[in-house]
Amino acid sequence: MGAVVLALHHVSILVADAERARRFYEDLLGLKPLERPDLGFPGAWLALGDAQQLHLMQLPNPDSRDGRPEHGGRDYHLALRVAYLAPFIERLEQAGVGYTKSRSGRPSIFFRDPDGNAVELMEI
Image (cartoon, one colour):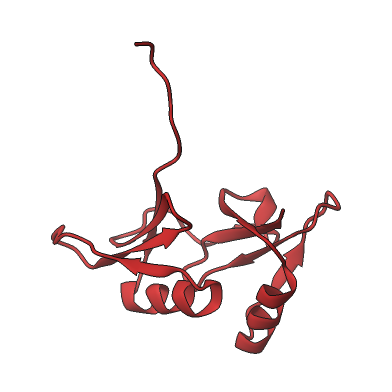
């Protein structure tokens, strides 16, 4: 058998407070918690649909938040497909989370989580 990548399994991001980050992703994006083994540091695993996962890791972050562009599309980011942007925009606005629209004209928005990680929501 040849070397074949089947799919993306998970993305791990560093957070300063795992509980705060977990609430952000569960409350605003509706992600569901998954069981997580004891890895020796705080964190959470969240389901992204049926097959992918987001792993939150409370570990020291060597990447400074200083100098990151306001628009997350010009920074490394996590992109999530959604059926409709409107309900997410409403949630973000109610929570006081700022966002920017895609500069390419695509139906997508960018925002940052409490730790400065950029997230894109793409309406598909």
